[in-house]
Image (tube, rainbow, N blue to C red; front, side, top):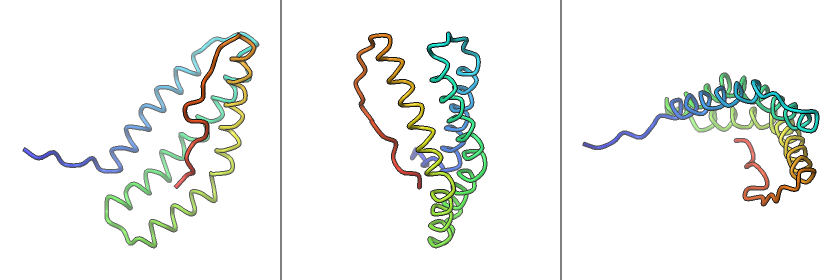
Length: 121
């Protein structure tokens, strides 16, 4: 029995579910003042990413799954990049800085494995 590849919409839904679950965990944390900046930055990133996943990324996945014309897919990818890339990068950078500051303050030895997210497509 051959396995069918996952549809892109299924992948986006899986990522959305995981992201929503992790967001709820972050929101439920009670943290001291020294972690407030990190928690605030994390929450802001989730609050930007969740609507994007629910809406535009779900629409883009549907375009791929429906074998839409390449120019339509490319136009939507460009629109997503133009609309979200700068904001995402700024929020990501703020979270990264807050996390690194927290680690330094608490003597945590942090090694960056993936220092920057890939560009949005």
